[in-house]
Amino acid sequence: MTICTFSRAIATLLIVSILLSHSAVAAQSDVVSAVNQIRLSDPNVLVGTPNHRGFGGTIIDNMFYPDGLKEGKIRPEYLDIGNITGTLTDLNSAGTASYILKYTATGVTIGNSAIFDNGTNIGIGTTSSGARLDIAGTIV
Image (cartoon, rainbow, N blue to C red; front, side, top):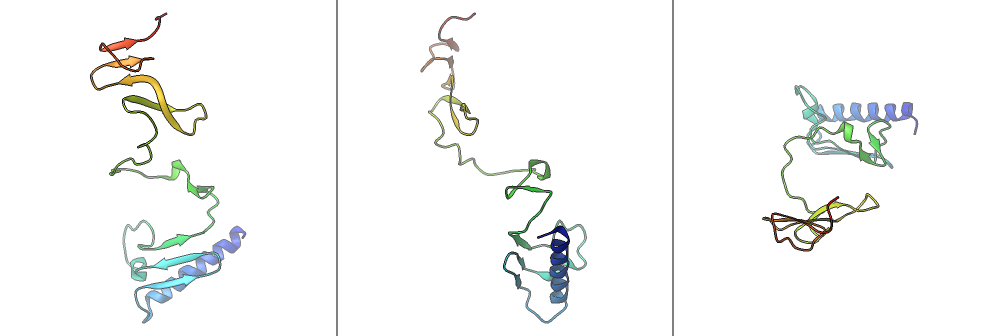
C-alpha cells in the first residue's frame, strides 16, 4: 500500500466516522476492511472536543505507519511516558535471590551478576557475605 493510497484510506474512514456521528446510527460503529479495523466507541468525541489526543475510543489495528513504528513496536522516542504504576512481572524468575541482576553476554536476557546483597552486607564474587563489604580474591 503506497502512502497516497494509505492517505486516501484514512481520509475515507474519517469521512465515514464523521457521517456516522451525524446519523441515527448507534454510538458503537464498526468499520472493517480486509486489512484495517477502526472501532469508534463514541463517534461524537471527534466533534467539538478540545485538547483530545486522538479520536477517543478509536482502536486502529494492523495499520502501516512508516515513521513511528519499527517491526510493529512504537519507537522509544515516540513514547510519552509519565506516572507509570504497577509491578514488574517479567523479572520474577530471572535470577537467584540476593544477587544483583545484569544482562547476560547475549545482551537480551537477564541473569545473576557477581554481586551478592543480603540486605545488610554486600559480597563480590562470594555466595555469602560475612562483612559489610566482602570481596573474594585479591584486590589489585
